[in-house]
Length: 342
Image 1 (cartoon, rainbow, N blue to C red):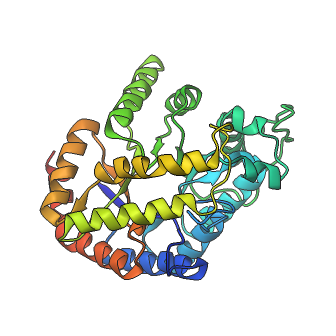
Image 2: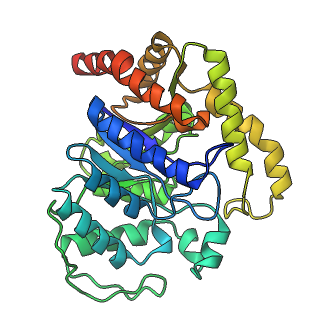
């Protein structure tokens, strides 16, 4: 059982950019002291929902700040960066941290990111498969070059060579059929977005397992499940506050999306409360016993053993840190014990 924190660096009422980043730093230090296994850093551009614009930069800072805990990206927005640049950065962090880096790759969803950074949206449309394969080639020193017009690169030796061979752990953060096929073929785990419901996760895991079996293995890997979570006695109040925080964070500084380019932003804002209500309503929020019941049911349905807990939507750094503390002392030991006995 692997228990980590999902550090999104969101801006809320009374929590500005600096406070959001300080919360991640404080959460990281607290998590390491309490025995959490991993930290997962997100990446967003130009929106209040998350102000960390370079996941590998913050991951590098947290790796230098800590000594034991693993740090991963959830995710690097792969199509926005040349794959050789990603491989070089990963090589540095993997070596400097004695192999404590996990690399999650995704593609994002806002068209403004691509427009501002002068990246053709065709890179988003083809998914992250090309970048994924290029990064693996570069880190593994296979000497493969590409003449693809969207992802051209020469055969080079990336330095420094990674400490972890053939490459650090890589997670694939998309559930498109093409990405799931590549991930299953390469035996790479998936990262599940925090808003995904249990049914859709189970369906994707089954698809992954079926593809894996077609390639001669059982498909049993520890996919990462990002989960909104908060330990508080008053469940109703906690859910209301988390929902209000997420709604405000989603709607402030929103941008046109690549998946729904024709959807008016005001219309999207009208849909946000129902979306957030569904996400928080299905999440483990409340006192420890309620949290444990939720995890028992979720694990039985999905077989999950690797979690990234998203506690920030409460919009209150003190409440977030208190929940991190309570989960470690009142939930984690029993959750890990049940996982070890299964």
